[in-house]
Length: 152
Image 1 (cartoon, rainbow, N blue to C red):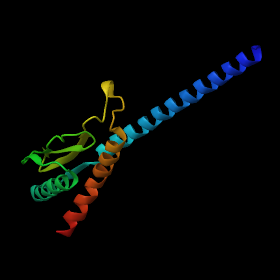
Image 2: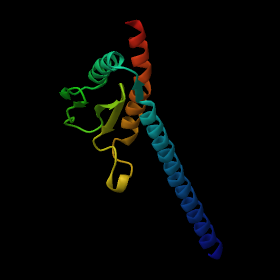
Image 3: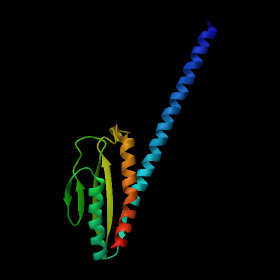
């Protein structure tokens, strides 16, 4: 009987350890994804040097947002571009800003998904799928601008 109790306790202990490893793995994956999202946000920033270059880059930014989003544009003026909030979760919302800087400007593309985060910035129901979409879109932004600015 004592042997049976000892074996049962050992199994419970192993189960608890494997559960902790799973939670640790999830936490590690979340941390890595958050770091990738932060890097993608930094990568989605471009500096333009003069009014003509900035106007062309801003026009391409609008086109990129329209192509990347499944939602319609709510705003597209000289300083901001915003898409509508999707009706369901799992779809990114995009926005961009253009901030004057000397004779040029800084253009930044932002993205977020509804239900990406839960309470206190925990993993939400659509976190993984949203993160993948956002990272790909933000990391492709500057390359899109460079390719299309050179072509003109």
